[in-house]
Amino acid sequence: MDIGSNYLRIMIAQINIDGSINVLEELVNTTNIGKDTFSKGRIAVSAIRETCETLKGFTILRKEYKVKNYKAVFVR
Image (cartoon, rainbow, N blue to C red; front, side, top):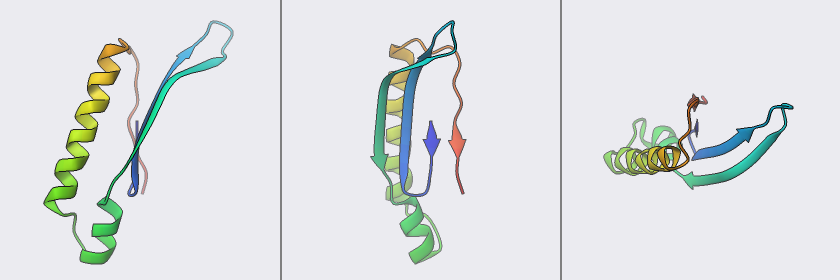
């Protein structure tokens, strides 16, 4: 999961024995976190709610794929 100021992204991939990677699914959703922060100096409640809903969806997807190892990244 990549949590940025303009988008949220999840990539689900399989790492093979030889070290190669197969991307199984990748989803990107835009967010207003950065826009609100730069224009208003704070994140709007609606942007927080939308972000939380997107992250909940990512969690469901991760569970559907039975992901064992994952990493969330927040980029400033």
